[in-house]
Length: 328
Ligand code: G3H
Ligand code: 13P
Ligand code: NA
Ligand code: ZN
Image 1 (tube, rainbow, N blue to C red):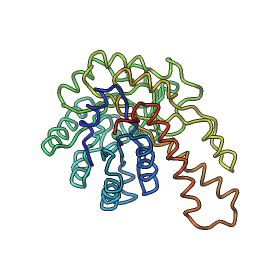
Image 2: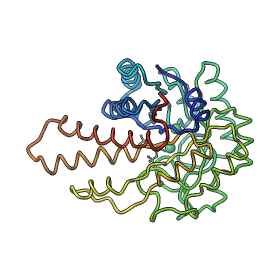
Image 3: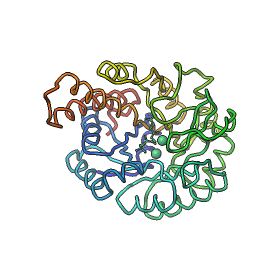
Image 4: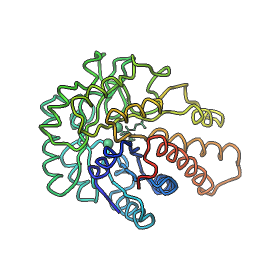
């Protein structure tokens, strides 16, 4: 059955677990997540970005998810818009069957420049008011994703803003967070604590200087009843980098968010953990491997099946690690 983000995260908070939100663009990613959910009896958050909606088209995305709900009737499914950039984008998602939307008002609608707090309050409050009228949940974002190593805040295209920002400019301010949640009435709040999107998050295994989990703790102390969201939460496992690079890939050495840090975050109110990059790497490793080792192969399914299996294994691991397993 489909459920809203609020219903799912309220349950997660009651029982003290976290829920990975995996991105989908196609049937194979969807099936990998659903099979992992069935194997571990986990509720799922499927999230689609603006890029995913443009790639597959809303009518297809919607029916893919309807198909999953029919095939996996025992699994609660939330369909969430990842990084909606304006009110219209959120409303069109709602009319296309999404049960939750993210209004990312931390960036201007061009998604390339940082937004003012006033802009963020206004667009996020508007989306929450409209979405709640039709029983849809809303995630907001406050603070600036980006790197504490370089001081570069991150625009949606992954490029850094001009000029270096200080720690207090990048990280979510706990006092402002409390006001933001009270005024916008969002169901979940994405916070900035030093993570960024994509594979290249950290140049070394992160410590407290570059991954500020203390900020999550401080926000949770002010807002114990608010569901917190961690973006940029791929762990970028060494094994996945190795499979890619052993079969012709050229990914420079990089470090992601250690799973133990996320598990720590779950103790401090983190309920939704966004993961896309790890899933992409799991699939791409298998594409490269089949391409390198089975050079006469030309059936796409010979590439897609091992890719799905690798993504499923990754999803099962995260469901177990975050305590989602057994809560479907
Ligand atoms: O926020 C980023 C997610 O990984 C989605 O990426 O915009 O390339 O679909 P995308
Ligand atoms: P990763 O790039 O770390 O997987 O983050 C995904 C994300 O935050 C989607 O909103
Ligand atoms: Na999101
Ligand atoms: Zn994100």
